[in-house]
Every structure is written in C-alpha cells, then in structure tokens.
Image (cartoon, rainbow, N blue to C red):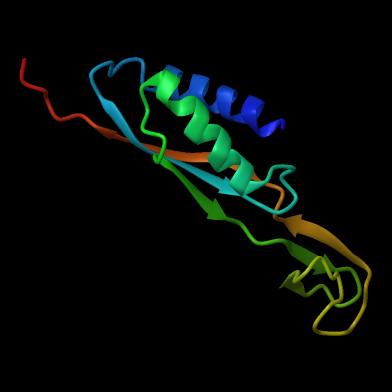
Length: 119
C-alpha cells in the first residue's frame, strides 16, 4: 500500500515544520484529499495510526477533509460536482467535460499544543 509511503513523507514534513518547537505536541494533522488524488482515505488513516507513534504523534491526530470531484462542461461551460464518476453535465447533458477539482492531496494544517509541561 503506497499510502504508507505518503504518510512517512507527511510525517517527515510535519517534523520539519515543527522542528523549531521541540516541546510542542502535535494535536492534529489536517489533510485535504480528493477522489482523483490516488490515495484511499481509510488507508491513509490506517498507515497514520501505525506510523505516527514512531514520531511521538497521537495515532488519532489525522483529520481528513474531502474535496469533491468537479468538472467543467466543454459545451455549456457549467462547472459542476461529479457524482459517482459520471461526467454528464446537469445543465445540457453533454459528456464532453474536463476535471477541474478533486485531484488534491494537500497538507492543510498542523495544530500544536504548546503548553509548557512542568518538570
């Protein structure tokens, strides 16, 4: 499952972005994922749950936001949300469309708890 490689790269990126706050605890890692991103959200969750503890991150810290698949009709120029991968324009019925969104896999944010821990 290549999602493990994606999560390993993500965790390295989180470590790099939080390196200047070594005492901070990562409380949330938010991703934005679309249906054309090439990854399965449930597989990302499973890989994160397995690998995050190695980076001292809680296994439940991953939050995934879904980006819908959208397309632009080449006939009438209507941009619409694609349902069930059916590229049929709801405006004119044309199947001549090109995807305009839904191919994202983006690290949207990292939340940290920077409260000082008593010795």
